[in-house]
Image (cartoon, rainbow, N blue to C red; front, side, top):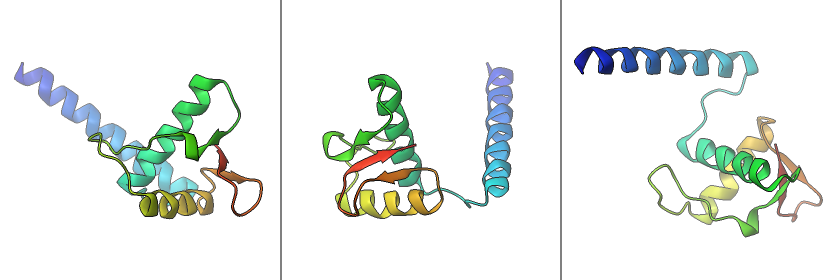
Amino acid sequence: FMKHKIKKTGEFVHILQMFDDMSKDLRIGRLTNSEKDILLKINHEIKTKGNDFVDIRLIKFNDFFGEPIPRSTLYKSLKSLVKKKLVKHLGSERSSLYSV
């Protein structure tokens, strides 16, 4: 069991390093936990619904532990994800439509 856990930990560290390297290559810096949770949720919604975009008003955004993400954090994170070009804001400034 211990060897398996050590192997898994080594794989996890390797993936973290790859993630950091890709973040540097893309010049996006490190994502906050909220940015990761929101990006993954938007991507999941787009893939499962088969659409090219989502209406964020129709999505319940929760963090890694299942707690709701506050609206102010959601909008701050979306703004940052758009700036990093990981998410696209569609329509007018007040639009609630986003794409990846």
